[in-house]
Length: 390
Ligand code: BEZ
Image (cartoon, rainbow, N blue to C red; front, side, top):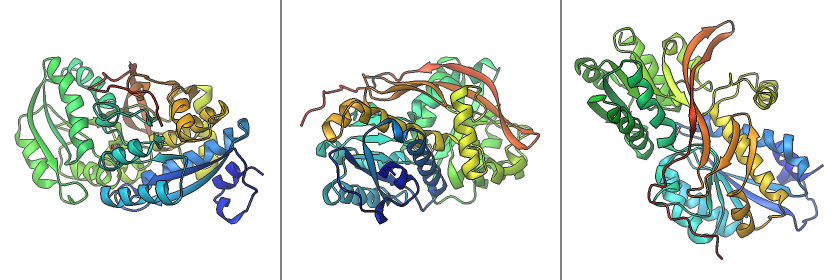
């Protein structure tokens, strides 16, 4: 059995297979604890599923070494150093938080280690701080939120109050939305950034939103914070008078059931919903459901596509840091999200964005697509992409 499959089953480290020239050591850097632990676990499940589905298409074998970032940039930097300097990985994948991505960017760039970003949307990592060694298979924070600014204004919403956690992703997601909402003629009547990983009571912020005169509220929250926020928004009695919009992580299928009826009617935008109708998505969604008993989330699909990108890159014969970095930037395939490619100007993924409403379906909460907004490539945002060099 190939090591790729063993790794997917969590058995790689207990088997000693003869080393081959095509063994690729992969450092999987994800939060397995902290506010984004569920996201990290879902990315890993998707990653392993792609190894099972596509691992047989390459001669390469993959040895997976996992480290927990704890959603703490200094901890993540230490773990990344261990993977690169001590374990000597050929490639790294993962990273959920934009703060963590900002912290490890110089290390991976300086060490010439390819990094496949499987979540963190930090705009700078594919903008002013872009690197030929960083390829993003997830989204950028601006990319997910810019289309929603114009769309919301087109629905007749003129005044918006925004809320997000106070760290890189929160600020960039809101900036992306505000840039297009304001350009379309909308007005931001108030903004709050809540202490990241520390806010349990959103009441004082919701009181400000209520008093602001806004027509609607637009937010970014994810993971445990999204569950608390959506529930408190509903129990504060705001949902009927002040409709809630946001980036789609707010009502991710990963935890929408924990939000329950409070999530019903919330409208958000994202690069993946499990209800996309395509053969590639149906195959993926069925396999994911068979394995986990639930529908896949955007996090699962990002892990799946990150591993698929690695397999595609290895099929070109790439097997060390430089050749993998080069090949990863050139992958393109049809995945559950649709046709995916990497923008050579930034190394960020190009993909459509879906506006969806969380509605009650026959089997519980589900995602009703209201609009598909065109495939978005980011502006270069100061990225001057250099060739891969040793
Ligand atoms: C981020 O920090 O980039 C992020 C975290 C969770 C969901 C989406 C983005």
